Image (tube, rainbow, N blue to C red; front, side):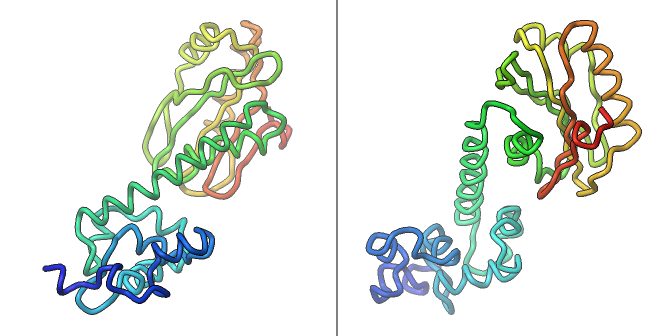
Length: 231
């Protein structure tokens, strides 16, 4: 499609130009659709970039979080969105997710289970598969290291107890926190979750590395073994 058959932003009136609006009024003045319109640049023959963005968002119930989970293929189903524009949107959403993750990491001292959730939710809360992570702490409960121990399918992961404490000794950790996600969204500890927690706790006691908590993380909430009194 030639540029003459679309609606480039530069051809709009000033009040309708998201770029100019951002410059004049600031980023907070723009709607979600206007911000997405800046990413895609132009719409199709029959609609502007803003109208196209509104239509795309409406398919996700105008929820940016849901929209951010769209795949390249799903975005390309919209007329006017080719591979390049879809990739641009995906890249912008990923940058937003990473920024959120880095902001959370600044909360380096663990003071509660909520702090752990704020750190781990951006990393594993929205994944379609399970991942098991370990957070390693010093004697001031500050994070000195964290790593993905294993990655599994929709229903589970494998945990290597020896590897958990090998890394702990290498990092001079005095405590660890276990974390894994439930893609199903169910906040309930399975018997397997409880068994691996007990196994790691016993192994840690022999090495003077305490297991402080085990969190099950979902997209919007978490379950803490310590808070529930089952650690």
